[in-house]
Image (cartoon, rainbow, N blue to C red; front, side, top):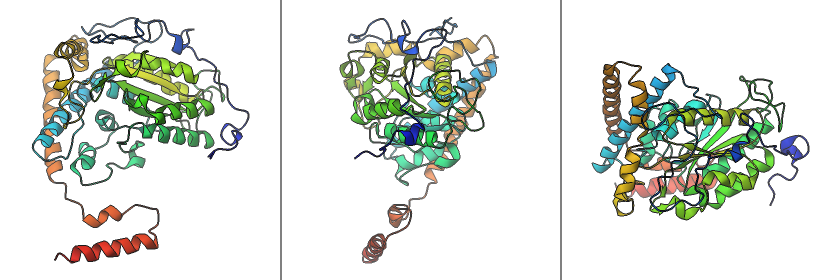
Length: 417
């Protein structure tokens, strides 16, 4: 069954042909070196190719395609957000180990990919996370404890999605990619992409510009494991066919639970975009400045009506897949050591060390410790839900069948009293 029978319902005309865009005269999906030098990574390879603006030693790197967009104040904000995310992640892991959470999904090592991309989004843009994007949520203004609700088992969701323009977590791999593309097609129907004549550029579709008051983009997060799912590939097809203003942000943390990324794909994940007809870029996911610059470009392109972009943020998961996983059974110790030298927080600290007083770093850590203590207090204060609440919000209006189920469940509970 075709949900959209007439392409003109979306495009307002013939099917859109998305022409290759360019930055500094180069097509993004043909950037030399954007995917790393090897197309078939060998076991144990660091896989740290990609666009880079900040080296592991904290020095800035010149790149002809992208430049650093973050000024001094924004770099300090990035550092603060990353330290906060790591500290809250540590506290949530401890809470789970102490039996206060059903499960926790650590993000350690992926702070730059999440904070840099989230900072590139405007408040009007809509974000679709997977299940590990805690730093994205916190940077977006979601209260820390709201991320905990689902994983403490007191709610089926978490935060107010409309308030933060960010959907709740999706546990089923890649399902959120279709949700995001559907939302993006709705953006097109609403005329909220490519309507202006701003800095979005020219070419492709629409007028080629953006109106900052009306235009928006959609960004969806997925992992390297989700890239092997049918839903993700269907989402790529639909996004490309209709020119949906969607940025697919893949955090390649090298391990889909215990399956290495190299086993899932003989080529860099960013290159898959070529087959669907839209740009794909590979960025050093431990470089918050590069992630921010590349994601800013991709979101601007989407807002201007020129269709989707795939970003592969090459990073590393420095913790188990979840707290039910034993990563020591499959992550080689030498691999972990090599990636620890590329720690995203330490990398930015080295850059900032020449710009701020040493005491500032101590203050950032102190504030993160206070936030962690607040998270623990707020988590323990979460009241268990009424069991009948599992029947709430199943449909927009309760049906007669649902009412009968509610009445039966109430009688069943009362029978134990």
